[in-house]
Amino acid sequence: MPMSVTLFKQHFGVSPQGTASAPGRVNLIGEFTDYNDGWVLPCALQFRCHVAWRRREDNTITAVSREYPDQIDNFQACDDYQPSNLPWANYIRAIVAALQSEGYVTKGIDLALWSDVPQGRGLSSSAALEIALLGALNSAFDWNIDGAKIAKLGQLSENAYIGCQCGIMDQLISTKAQPGAALLLDCQSLEASSVTIPGQWSIVILDSNYPRKLVDSEYNARRADCEAACVAMAIPSLRAANTEQLAACRDKLTTQQYLRAAHVLGENQRVKTTAAALQQADLAAVAEQLAQGHNSLANRYEVTVPATDTLVAIAKAELGNRVAARQTGGGFGGAVVCLCHRDDVPQLLSAVERNYTQKTGLKATTFVCEAGAGLEVNNNG
Image (cartoon, rainbow, N blue to C red; front, top):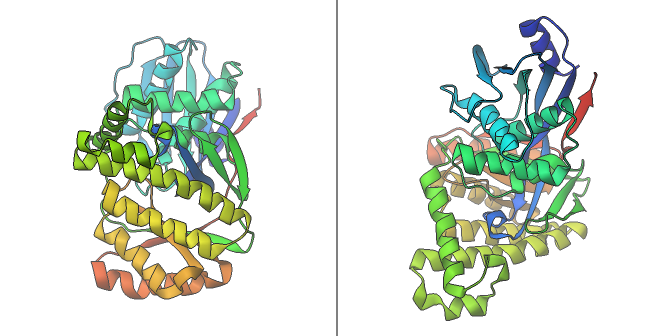
């Protein structure tokens, strides 16, 4: 029984009519390509956000969360979007507003949220919440919204109401993920193809515990740089660009605009090369692509920090080309993702334990993960 069901019964005194859950994710490679209509290679994780629900006879939406046991949010489904003074509840209100802007009329419902997706670690706990909520509401009100549209609604909630101009990757992988595999996602067409992660490999996430905030102004500034490069090249998105076009327009761009665009063009190619190497179970080739990707994040997109750079360096010093490692997520802190043989995991974790605190004064949190499933919905009523 999902823990969200237990929470629902404890708070509302009755059983829910249904549940939905969606995973957090780690992006193996393809950073900041999604909002440029490019390609990404994420996989879902075993960590999930669970939502239990029961419809009401009125228009009140009531939400409780295991992570915030003393807080309850109430609002009217028919009201225009108004931010809550509870930050976690803003995501619920944003989802309802996004749905209503697209013609899906939400009515009263009770919601209980339970999540074990680590927050603030670059593992997309927010998208897991959005997609789980959308799955629950889609089931509760019999809308029959398909997976691609669910992902788009999740993105819309962030872009239009939360104020983060994210791409669609996080919501798409949380919706469509398959166990044991990454997904090669085309963020323009929303087409997805499964790329099996070799069974003898492990996904290891090294959380830097560097105080990470998704600094909206910095994130949005980089998106604006990419858009400016598109204007200079007279193209709809950086997906349509090539290195020759970018070089020809260099004089029309600021240094930052040029570097951001150069990162995206190179990253799109690295995604495709990494997917091919994964299919061949070629860890050394994957390691080379992730190393190039991390260097580009550091020097072209300028979103790494000394803590994440140090974790990558420790991993490479210990295992060489037996580990693929790079910073993952929105940057400015957060986590490093590693792929290595299962037998090498203890050696990798030991190296982090020995060296990271000494070099940074911080203590890393480590997660040994497996690729999980996407959105799951269970309607009991």
